[in-house]
Amino acid sequence: MKNIILEKTDQVSWYTYMRDVFEAASIAPEDYDWYVSDIETNWNPPGFSPDDQWLTGDELAAFLRAYEVQFVWAVFSAVPKGLRPIPAPVPYADGNPRYWDGTELEPQLAGALFEIACWDSSATILINLPEQAIQSFLMRYPDAKPLASARS
Image: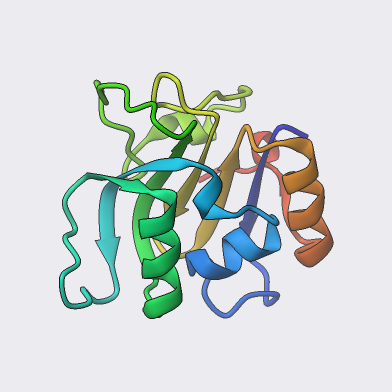
């Protein structure tokens, strides 16, 4: 399984609570740089901007440790540290039909290793995660399933 989705389950309180998503997938945010786009949250902590933005892994990890924020919509694109490709077009989740067309997807951001999409606070979509991360996520959330089997 290359791409998975977690939806329609009681295994989570918040689907798009990113601290739990990273923990479940055994992904250390500090290991990557992140382009976070198409952001809508349940609240905006002090100093947080909902604008599309680049974050270092350390910045993202510190933010997730400091605040309990649910991302209603967002795309987290992981890139190797120091790589910051121009995001054109900008990755997006809200209204993006590609998640539901049944094909195997690649991350939207050129150069991204994987992406995590927060879908309307009701699903977490994992695109191209390393196999070890997928297996870890599935161990925590056995209700996750192949994205190709999901329909919006």
